[in-house]
Length: 375
Image (cartoon, rainbow, N blue to C red):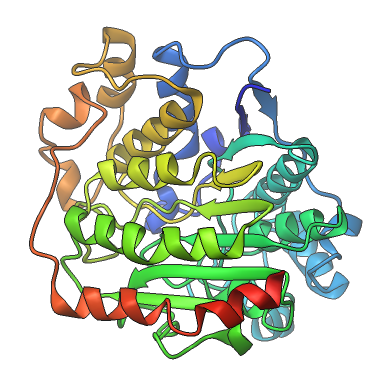
């Protein structure tokens, strides 16, 4: 089955608010870009369904889901709901689609799990809300689509699942959800000392997780080192039946909410390395707060999955998509020309620092026991 792309028009008109980091168009721009490139064949695209409250209750508390629905209907939140569920607090605003937008992301990832029941590859750029908690919003994430997708795979009887998270922020919500489930092994590569300030190298979630916290300035050479010296050995040891990749774009150097120094070549490198390691692969979106870098990164990810070569220069229709963007942060005042005309960033190689070598090596400690736990 050719790779499937899942999206929705809800992202085109939805915003967290004019001053929020997620005021920018991300998924809609990525979808427009791959269409302009001619990279979506007939039958490859699926519209994401909106997950029902009953489906969301596989992980989220029904009272919390009801509170999200109330907040959307009223466009306001009571003091009690704000305090209990953190809706309208901590960077999790009430906005027009405060229930429907995250429920669309969740519906897309659960659909991806269903589509890959017998094998296959699916990209869900609207997914990746990895901070969501069972009964509260956290880190711009109201629902945890990744957890719901992994639970759908578990319901299919899969017992060896690898979840890899390369967002600049630790995938805390997913790790904690599967703390006691030996069938889901989580690996998170994230910036050390960045919110949510979890995911130290010593945090192994009962043996079912590996965390690889990396320093500011983490470059392409260092990502390649971590991939080949830690992630791929882990994957080969675990022999997963399915892999889910949270492919947050906030590790790209120009992102305003992190201090990593990757080019988007690293994201495509990771995706390419995972393809073929398991019969099922779901690639999600995640963080990313510069509209040009996110759209170009995720379009390239889809191109990798679908077997398209990245052009040296974008054709005029794709260039027009990128030139139409605006961004009110400093980086948007005079964006460099290559943000309009190219998909691939210039590579950002560098020295592989000792601290990166150490955390990569530490991820492989006690590996036979980890593999045996999933066998």
